[in-house]
Amino acid sequence: MSKSYTQGVRVVERLSLDIAPGEFLVLLGPSGCGKSTVLRMIAGLEEPTEGEVRLDGTYANHVHPSERDMAMVFQNYALYPTMSSRANIGFPLRIEAPGRDPGPRVEATARMLGIEDLLDRFPHQLSGGERQRVAMGRAIARHPSAFLMDEPLANLDAKLRNHLRAEIARLTRDLDVTTVYVTHDQAEAMSLGDRVAVLRGGVLQQVGTPRVVYALPENVFVAAFIGTPRINLLRGVVLAPLDGAMSIGLGRQALVLPEPLSPDHRLLRVQQGREVIVGLRSEAVRLARPAQARPGEVAISGLVEHVEFQGHEVLVHLNTGSRPALVPDLEAPRPVSRPTRRRRREGRVLDRLRDRAGTLRAGPVVVLEHPGDAGSERTEPAPAEGRLPGDLIVRTTPDHALRHGMHVPLLVDLAHLFVFDHAGVRICPAPARSPDLED
Ligand SMILES: Nc1ncnc2c1ncn2[C@@H]1O[C@H](COP(=O)(O)OP(=O)(O)OP(=O)(O)O)[C@@H](O)[C@H]1O
Ligand SMILES: [Mg+2]
Image: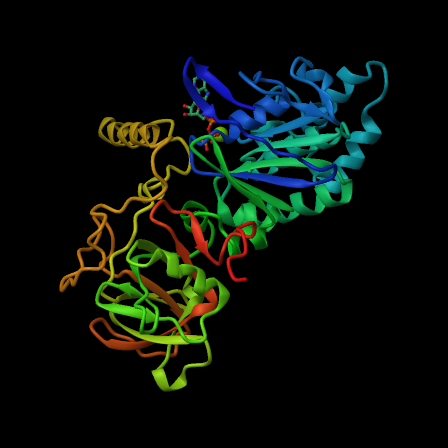
């Protein structure tokens, strides 16, 4: 289905998604990518401009929201301020079955959510998290056939968010109700979803289990959006001389692909001389000397630019002499929640960012400012604007004594190497459905 609010501007572009009964599906993407619009089309609050919504296999574009038997939970949980929690939770039940006492259902729901002792309080006497639980109770009490949740935890502090996240996971599993959950928080998506659907500029990028979208991202956007710290994306060039070892040049250094080449690496030969994007998650690189290399690991080195202490681990920002590839949608800081009161100057900056996000809707997934010059010798890597000068972030244990300016040996595990083409599409590991070029 597609959706345009203004003629000619599609905010959702030919989205096709099958949601299985009982499934927990997460719609994930940056602000403005169309998540809420998709959810509202499922709920019947918006009509698709093109295409159809099917419920249990039946065409449902014109089915009224109240007839869809779905319960929605929003970020701005609107409880009726003049009603107690008990009355709020019971309200949809009284509408649904007037004359029937909603009491037992309300109490069973409250027990499930651990809010029995809040039932006689009014919204203004509750904390944000408690209000959110009451709102959840109002959705659950009806035993709907589906839950639609739009960033229901976005207004809560981190601790409460984690707690309620676990609670939502447990509840939806126990109730076995189909759930579509919208978030821009990839960690939330990964921890909750049976499957995660990643949206960018109204276009579905990939849908799969959390494991698959992490381990086999179909493009640079998915790779960069999912996982912390963010995947390292370096601009490289494939070098495949007829009489020598194949390698991927990364500015001052190169990753030499070990012989015999793996099937995936062999496929890279057709990229000879072309610019590619190398993706290395922080677990693909470790601090160790070349002599310690295990099979499949190749040696490079880096200069320590910054050491980020995190307690149980350390993130080391290194300069390896390569240049990072930019993913435009993800470079600007994402507004976490829309500020209600903001100073004029801040407002203008936010508006500018939003305008830019608008123009990027159909723009490229990845930007290589000067295509074609990645293979040339460079002595001074130019750091991207607003970034730390490092081009590679590596995780390590806190016992390494690392200081700014140190030169450290690195081992790259090629089993964890991603290669994307210049447009950002993954070419290594090879896409599953690509024709087998080996025999
Ligand atoms: N009623 C509307 N009229 C016109 N444009 C709209 C309307 N609602 C949403 N849009 C536009 O459609 C796009 C998608 O909006 P949507 O609310 O679905 O995004 P989202 O992914 O939910 O973002 P967020 O994470 O910020 O909530 C945005 O560019 C938004 O400005
Ligand atoms: Mg939204």
